[in-house]
Length: 98
Image 1 (cartoon, rainbow, N blue to C red):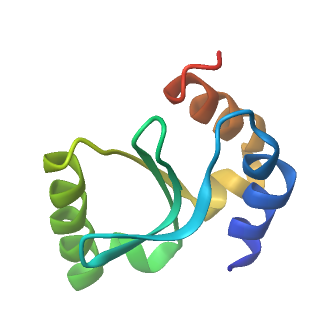
Image 2 (tube, rainbow, N blue to C red):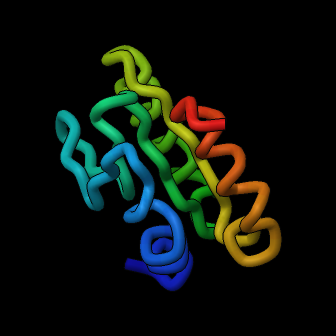
């Protein structure tokens, strides 16, 4: 896991009352975190996710996940570092705990 993924997992996701798993395979993709009960994938994106081929790959992957009823939350490394309370509140909202 990246530093940002570790922060999100160890200080927030693993202690929630709904279960999240790490590095979950969905189809032929692997998502950073997945909540099967709510069908929500959480992806932590570094700067490479906003460039060229990686950006196109992410669009295709998100479309596959959405087609299978999975909501994808994309969170930047910057937001993990600088806006962590907002990140937590957003996740709580999507999983129905806020």
